[in-house]
Length: 68
Image (tube, rainbow, N blue to C red; front, side):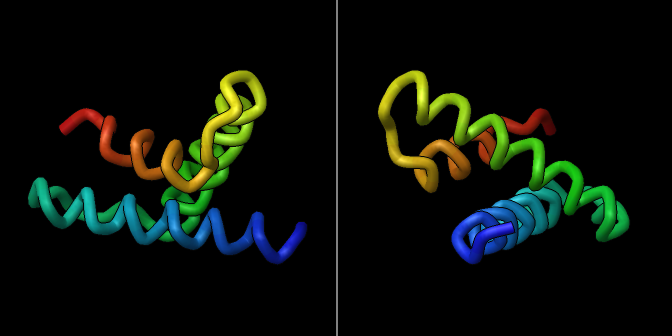
């Protein structure tokens, strides 16, 4: 796994943690957060390749779109 990919996944994990805390939900175990972050980053890369957008912006949008 590349350095940039690891950084994107770490960003997604931090955004997920922030989102859970903001809506006062208990944090899932770290392995679940990590799996969810991997899915978010994969989806962001797919969207970026289709639409030519910035991956980081897409990751932020996907994390913010989580249901409460």
